[in-house]
Length: 167
Image (tube, rainbow, N blue to C red; front, side, top):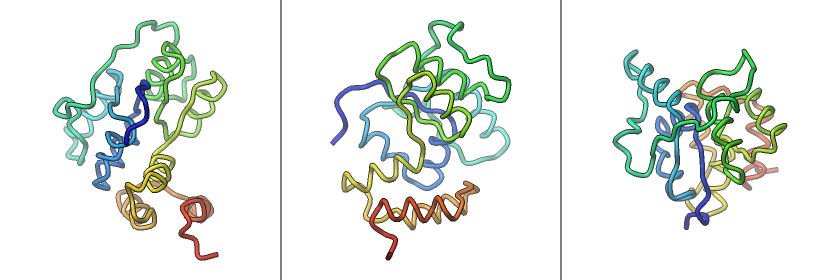
């Protein structure tokens, strides 16, 4: 059952990795709807043009595009990509929203701004808790096979939190 309506703003990597692991549907099941800023659409389109397996967000009815209403909210951090910057700006423009971010720097900036956030692995844990996934471990293996870098310590922590560690 989806959470009560709350704006959920997704960056490129959670959409990409969940799509590649065939788990994109979890976003709809957990949150009902997701929005993406224009820079995320551009990044996904660029990936598709380079031959990568990326979701076609324009064809997914529960994902809609939302423009950043106030460009002055874009973080002035040169190491952030345009997608992360626009996700954070949208989050700051909509108090109480949830940002889906995997990038460590973007998550730190979101936290400093008081923006609630989670990433691909947090989504998987939430899905397991909600009974939408039987196990997290095979999805982690799938994500790694698609190039997601997951440190061994982090994987052990995630599996422990999912009740799959065997410890």
